[in-house]
Each structure stands twice: as structure tokens, then as C-alpha cells.
Length: 111
Image 1 (cartoon, rainbow, N blue to C red):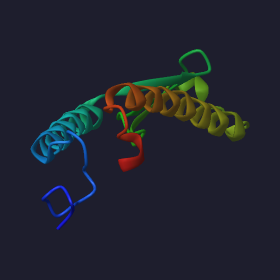
Image 2: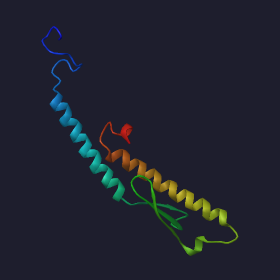
Image 3: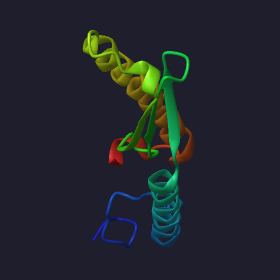
Image 4: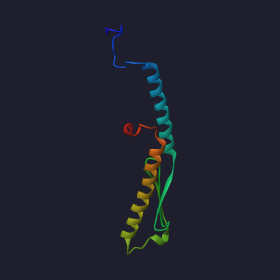
């Protein structure tokens, strides 16, 4: 026993264990909601003035690619590859920004 009549525990002062648990549950609920929203969100990235469009979810997972016929040049496949990469990077960057906005403060280290 400690000299204050309790068994210690490291939560000195006015820290209430029940309030701490309630706060943790609230954060879990916020994270679950944010994760569901991120999974369902669709973000588009474009390159080449819209010749290539890539769709990702809020986590940056690839959902689809749209390529306009005029972007396809059999003699310049490298340009098309570059456009796809650029469109994906555009969408992934936006997805990362959205994820940082949606997740509760302090939750980024938990994902």
C-alpha cells in the first residue's frame, strides 16, 4: 500500500480511470468511422490534361484507371506509362491529405 491508502498505479492526481477508458472508447469510435469513410471515398487523379484518370480510395488503394484513346500511341508507350504514374501520384497525394484530415488527433501512429 502507498502512504495515501491506495495501491499506487501511476495515475496520481485527479486522473479518473473510468474517464480515461471512456476517452479511449470515443477515440476508437472516431477511428472506426474515419476508416470506413476513407475506405468508401473515391479520389481521382489526372495527368496529361485528363488523358489518364486514376481513381483511388481514401487510403490510396487503386480502384480504377481510365485512359482516353488519344493517349495511346504504340510508338510512345513510355509516355502513357508516365501519365499513369503521374495520375496515380496525384490521387495518392490527395488521399494522404484526406486521411490526415479525417483521422482523430493522435491516431496517425496507430494506423
